[in-house]
Length: 425
Ligand code: NAD
Ligand code: UGA
Image (tube, rainbow, N blue to C red; front, side, top):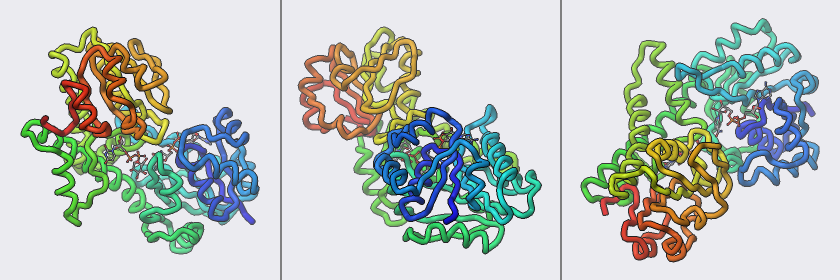
């Protein structure tokens, strides 16, 4: 059986490789980072992602996953190549395609005639066409198969996606790629490459804008004394709106929304189109971070200098160790620049090495001696921490829960100043 080659074994590449292996394909994963490939070969997942660790062990044991650092080796026995390498933001906010270009050139050096290069990395509209024009091989085809997984539920999102989108140069190529997903029961959407590329950015920009709307609404609720939870629940029960993805928070972050919203605005601008709504969502998100800092400051008598702040949560959301563009780190940065000291706890994620920021081993240790406690990631275990014990070790009585995860009754009876984001009281 021919293998499917997956280039770049990060969140997306690992999920794709292990997901395809789980549904019966034979896969070869290509990774250039020696530590990462060493860890994978040893059957140890280099990231925290629920469910993927046992799939890694199973697929190595069954022989359905092979690993290499060489695209040449992968090309010897593969005709389909999924590109899953990073597309970070460049200095102008656009997507930097250097890794995607380097990998497609290498694939073109080694691929046999009839091969298909499938771009799964998130790339700006026109990338498929640009790669096609820059590669001197008319005997290989290009396709786009954007990825919609969320970190923390990556495997489940692979196995039960809302849809699978494939953009291809012709229907034969589209069918080749779609047939790889025959064992997955989901609507299959077949488009041109350019439309598939745009679907991915449109989905992320829409979701990010929706959250900015909710976070702005939460700020209004605080001012007028409404409760954002009730407001979004009433709003989301309109079936045209829907209740999912309406949870207010300290601002959105992660490895994709921030860079993808900027990249979409940048692409639109280069085509003379102003995507004002997405631009406003980005600006609103920056205001969301500032609002958290301002609210905490006002709860502390308009003073942050010299204050000890306990922070619960470093990851950009629960169930991941990823801190790329984490709202938590953005807010900590602002607290430090105002002269606070921060003791942070996260069950999995690691803190950066910043002056004034100390990572500690437990939630209660972080709270010890703190003037205020700030909850920034919605890890469910935070809801189980004893408020009495926390109150005993703290110096002050300010708690600001930006994720609405702490049980209100128990916490407000222990703390004079227990506040939740999006609620005036
Ligand atoms: P990542 O940083 O976790 O992983 C990328 C991997 O590619 C790394 O392990 C890196 O060492 C490897 N790599 C880089 N150059 C290589 C090369 N020449 N050969 C082999 N390996 C190479 O990135 P990610 O989060 O998986 O994201 C990858 C792409 O998928 C990005 O475009 C991202 O926007 C998109 N995406 C990410 C997510 C997500 O939740 N993380 C979801 C959907 C789409
Ligand atoms: C997001 C998209 O949801 C995926 O579909 C997409 O594939 C991925 O980006 C990508 O392109 O990388 P992810 O970044 O893993 O997935 O995380 P989300 O669950 O979307 O959360 C993003 C941010 O929004 C987090 O900071 C999270 O806390 C915040 N969020 C999410 C809220 O504040 N409220 C919500 O209701 C949902």
